Amino acid sequence: MICIRNGRVMNPADGMDCRTDVWIENGKIAAFGPNPSDAGPDREIDAAGMVVAPGLVDVHVHFRDPGFTYKEDIVSGSRAAAAGGFTTVVCMANTRPVIDEPAILEELVRRESVLPIHVRQVSAVTRGLQGKEPVDFDAMAAGGACGFSDDGIPLTDPGLIRSAMEACARLDLPISLHEEDPVLNEINGINKGKVSDRLGLGGAPAISEDIMVARDIMLALETGAKVDIQHISSGRSVDLVRYAKKMGARVYAEVTPHHFSLTEETVLEKGTLCKMNPPVRTRWDQEKILEGLKDGTIDMIATDHAPHSPEEKDREFTGAPSGIIGLETSLGLGITNLVGKNVLTLMELLEKMTINPARLYGFPCGDLSVGMPADLVIFDPGESYRVESFASRSSNSPFLGMELLGKIHWTICDGRIVFES
Image (cartoon, rainbow, N blue to C red; front, side, top):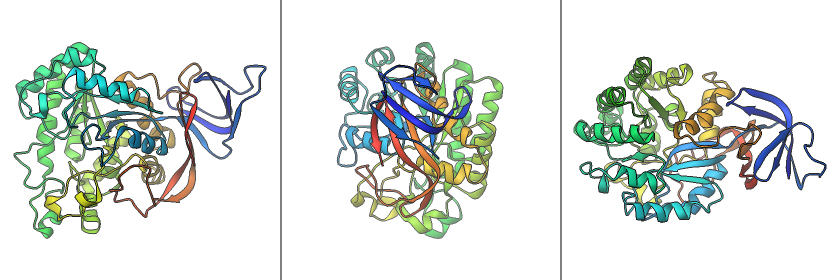
């Protein structure tokens, strides 16, 4: 039995916000307040001055396993997640081989099942991520897929995406979409605008995202599918998602910490460490994202944790891959740039990082109610720390050297301590 004493317990699932003790037994939340049994605890954690919250949930990560494990693997990725306060993550399917056959999926699910945190796996939407032939949705769901995504590769065939949404609606599993029309992008990874013009790069315009979002929210309304608009970056796309929700579509939106923290000007300072798809955009787009977070249009914060080696990132801009790591800085960026700037309350931030992503997938987590799995993060929202190193195998982050608030002290998954600072 573990007792977490004197912490401020915050549970967005039911609005609980009070100072009390938390008792953990047999991997579950056993009680709050007085000891529920005659036996004393095997371990006590003094959380005075700290917040005790549900373990964070990230619906969009890349652990590069199988095929690219020099960047990350499921073990190092899980370690990075735990260091960032995450107890449940969802891995994308753009591996080598692609997760598009039941045998490939089932082997990966088996390996993920013994990790210290909960690592779930989506299936690709199309075979080989080629955007042409759909996977066997029923077989992949039976093999353990929690959803479907060709993330990283936009789906450009409206007929194919409609049939995929129909299959996902029948299975009641989410489909997550990378919204960029490749025909409209000249150079990936940088916003088409004043910074790309200054650097002599073509860039990726916001309209590339907007037209794909417009198409897919209408298909979501038509099919009844549960659709996740991934890493939203365009202010107009935020408005489109708001419209879709008002129309009754089952549309959800996720935003990354880098899209609410950075703008295109950061590319001038950080170079390829600020190259990602979709790119960080203008101050206006950022303000619209903050507006969408505040009014609930954007449901979730997801990292799009995308490790790359130093050799890959240390190239001229057009030759470097897109993506940054994000699991270990996500909570700190949220507290610093959202709570600290009065965009969200701490409870609202935690809602977007715990119960909302859990509900999208129907996961039994993100909730500290009695009887739920004992997945928790314990952090000091007022304690600053410098981003100096990572548990991830990679370190491609524009936030290195930054001072953030919200130091994580413990992460607990299924009642076991998986990270301790």
